[in-house]
Length: 235
Image 1 (tube, one colour):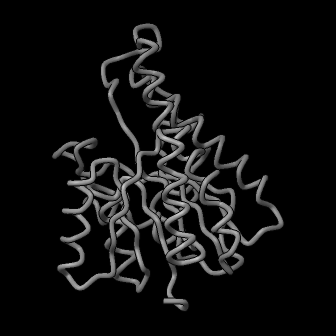
Image 2 (cartoon, one colour):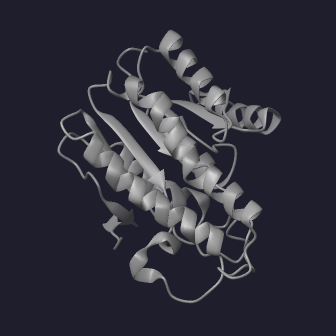
């Protein structure tokens, strides 16, 4: 176990998160698939285990600081470190809401999950990432959070949350300068998931590809970047 990379994927029970768990495990990484819903998370992990992959489940609610700390305590006791963190868990609950119609409860719920969630998890797990010879943090964002692509209306809460996540990615990368940890954001594109819908052009494996590519980068690889399809994307 000591020579294998250890990864945590949040929101790993479906979609892009599930794809990331599969691709990481295929690459020989020991994966902790985390999800808020224990039954769904256990089912997803067992499905991947049934394919001969080393995937385990641990419950995680990214909106709950105590839950993040419990995960950190488990990792510390079981592995002593963490090598990869993919912050994937997110919600989209404001498809028809503009900045003038979105209610504060929806905005707060979205930002609490999509922005504060990765922040909470990083605060809990960065001490373990610092024990890795090559820590990697990947924040799953969206082109909806790109200031360059702020065209059209709608999705106000989601866009605000992802723009803030992009800012957090850059701030965290600066805060971790001089450590062994790199921090990047990724846009998975339009993916066939519950969020993306059945008409999306990408499979969840394709949507997860760039996240895993960043997570497996060698020393000297990208840092403080935003990527889509393994290419830089404008902030």
